[in-house]
Structure formats: C-alpha cells, structure tokens
Image (cartoon, rainbow, N blue to C red; front, side, top):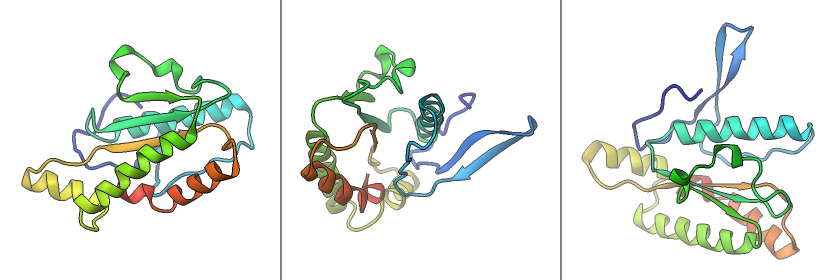
Amino acid sequence: LGQEYNSSVVFNTNFRIGVHDEIFEEYVDIGFKNLIINPGMSVDTLYRFIRVLWANAVLNVKPGYLTTYVYDPNEFGQVLIPFYTNDLDKLLLFEKDSLDNVLKSLTGYCEQNLKDMRGKTIFEFNKECEEVGKTPKEYKLLIVMSQPKNFEEGEALKEFLTYSSQYG
C-alpha cells in the first residue's frame, strides 16, 4: 500500500486491505456505497483499519481529486493526523464543532452534481469525462468519528448516507 496510485479521475473501488499468509495481497471491492464501521474492536485496531481505508481512497483516484472531511469532536482528528502535512491542507479537513455545517456543504455539493451530471453517478460521469476530455467532478469523503450531537444531525446524516456515495 502506498507504492502506487491511480492516475485516473475514475475512483477505483478495489481496496488493498492486507497480505494473506504473508504472500498474497488481499483486495476487497467496496463498490460505490457508504461504509459504516461499528466500533466493536479496540481503538487501535479501529484507527489502523480507518487509516488503511483512507490511504486506499487517496491512492485510488488521481491526486487532487479527493477531499476528506473528518468530523471528530472528541479526538480532534487523531485517527488521520499521522498522515497530515501542509501539502494536504486543502485535501484533509478537520471539523470538531458542527457536523451540521459539514453536511450542509456536502449536501449542496451532491445536489449541484446531480444537476450537472444529469442523473449519472459520479463514477459514470467521471468515466465519460476522462474518455472525451471534459472536466471531471472531485470526490468528497466524509469520516464521522463520533455520534451526531443531536437528533437533527443524526437525521441529516442518515438522509445524506442514502445518496451521497453516488453523487460525490
């Protein structure tokens, strides 16, 4: 992991998750869906798993075409801080105060994409853009490391999860 990256603007959903029997690399196709990870493991294991998933996400699309938002009011983004450099300042954003603000911004982005892409998924749209030389859409990744603070945030997140993976 980390020795190669995808030079395409089309997100590759095939994630490298480890090595089996110290010989074979293992891959999982996560598809275009939202992942929900329940913390039924130690915090260290959970953090390592999230870091592997995030590294895959960053490396599986052309550099600069993925922005990550980390909502983490309790740990202030410690899960991904080891990866942070000034070069990632605009691509790795931390939010500790309001999930609602992040969701409003990302919902607006998805709604605009839905209009711009005329009903196509971001995968279909970016594939077509790459083939004909048009400007593709950037991918946005939201990592929520804490329960929503209130019912309204929880409902907004639940609604966002129903469509966000398809439109940006």
